[in-house]
Image (cartoon, rainbow, N blue to C red):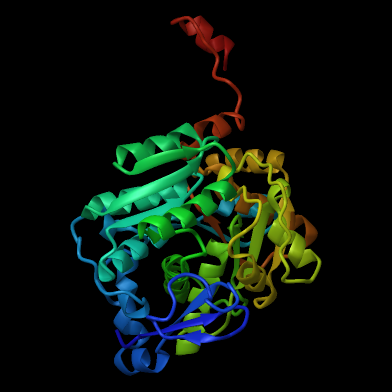
Length: 413
């Protein structure tokens, strides 16, 4: 494919042809960026050629992706992406803001942002004739891989820490993946997935480790760009995007998507990107605050399991997503995360803890004036609250048990 030129290391800048690397930089181990032929894309396409396409999924952006059409047009694989963006005027007023929207990734086929990366990985696996795809996951990435794989008959193996929420493990099993619960941390599962891929010749989807995960996640940036062409047509201020961060691959993917659009000359200005981490899992925020790209491992503890990571696999690029866009990193407590689940629920959004983390960060940013009243702001909810019902129940009061009488109803009004 002429539009896929190869890779470039995010640390040492060394370039590789498509067949010279698969995962990380063979020289220094850094994360690889996929290189696209922007000139060739521009010669064949203009923005209106993309925005006028009838495909309402991430596959409408196929000309900007390093994979070919995987087929499966009538399967859930072709339903990933193209998630809705909702206006939140009630919450905007409460925070002293004028323009607030939320992009809700819970409408993806397996109810999380991770379907984007898994859809692209399944397409790539088909191109290279991979029999099995393996990944480590606390639940969402695994569910996404299992679901996207099941849609087209691809075999998948998932390693998940034994502490992963039951609802997420149920998804893995229902989709028919080979699931193994690891008696250890998420980071232990990550290491095991890499070893298993090497041992058995499986294709490894691990977040950040595989450069195509970023290419899937960047499709959210394309959708934000297309939405903004209409929603922000008369607003000259840069959009501020709030994203929860664990491994760092979602925020780096969104950053990559915006950079692609700028390189093509299709977007006027780079949005500001804010990364939000739980205080108990803040390795990337720690590096940002220390003004360094050196990521130091921590012992992560947070109820937001999807962003609980000891050593982020995509930390350097995640730091750059904030530093290179005029954004920032903000940390929030688990109590603030749980409270944000309830706040979003009041406007009809049911977010899992990781998704609510982004809104919790916006709450802090509005109080510290990191964002101003007139700034256009977009919060990304990365997954459905049904992924972790136990966490959701902590955000609300228990429903009363009553007798079937009107008197009991009146007593509880």
